Length: 157
Image (cartoon, rainbow, N blue to C red; front, side, top):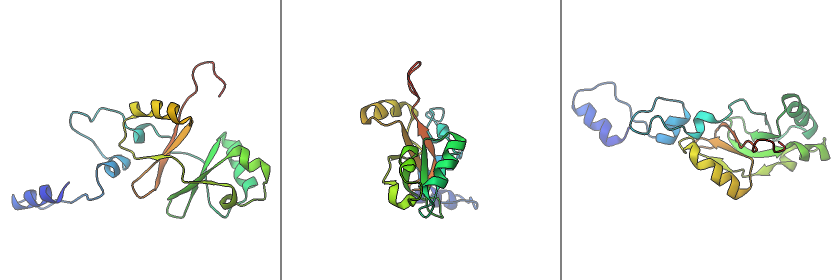
């Protein structure tokens, strides 16, 4: 809650008052309860796939490619030790030089969205930008999950 709301509650005698400074997006990212007239509207954090392929900068492309194939992932998210997103790497890039370090072949600065974005806003953006996936991160860049646009029925995946 805001500093003003917290101060007011404390002035009314409440003792268990916390200021949640990170904001609504991070509240949603943490999966905490929502209320109000828009609480039922799905957000990207609600639908993002949490179990995604990840790797580190110092890994070899061939090792990451093999893990991705085993789990049928088309993209791996490059993370630091704090799970902050550094980039992404596509499976086809890893086949070119399996000995290359991820740091050398990754795409830095991938498209990311904050967890409080409405899911209804995504399809048009994906279509307009010509992308098939995007990451959901906290405001600090910590990975929450992956959004993947499904191809239309009957279209190749």
